[in-house]
Image (cartoon, rainbow, N blue to C red; front, side, top):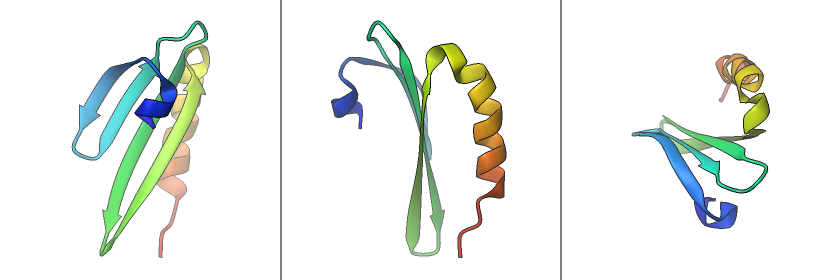
Length: 70
């Protein structure tokens, strides 16, 4: 994904999470979460215009808390 985004700045990187922002004129932030359950690894990707990230982040967190994987 980073390759497809072009020039990016890594904002945060943890074991199961990475966040980066494009350096284009209209900046886009991408948050990628990895969640392992049993033998499966689930990948959740959220792409948000940086200008709207603060509001979107609250919704992203609500959504992540309500996702059930069987």
